[in-house]
Image 1: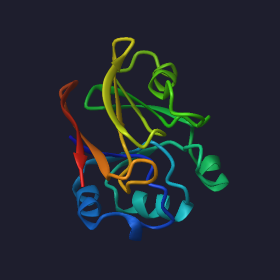
Image 2: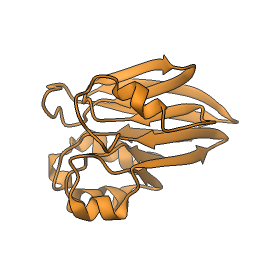
Image 3: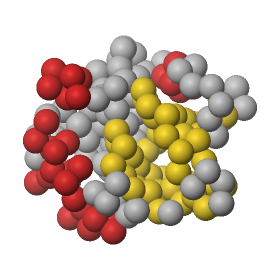
Length: 163
């Protein structure tokens, strides 16, 4: 199973997303978005072109999105348990990974956003992954997203990709 991971896109419509990434989203088995879509229109368009979609709300999302989406979500893909959060409380990016990790028990992977910078590291023995910002939203200035491949209960591939 191939998954595209996004976060911190801060868009009102798909027009602001790189065309290459849109094509990857359409082909992926699933899409995970770790919050801060910003506007409902972009969320709906992204969900519509995705084969399977999982997402949480972020601190900068509209009230409409915050009403629709949970601040944290646990899913299972191909036997891999994944926790997804932004985290919704926002604040300075210090300790964001630690705060994200603290929201989940019994997961194999925690996917989080908020910092706009990619990260792949361990926190309390659990792999944590931040795809960065696919739009290069401030303060990132570079566009990144994540690719995850899972099969048979294992993470086969997890990487940050620069646009």
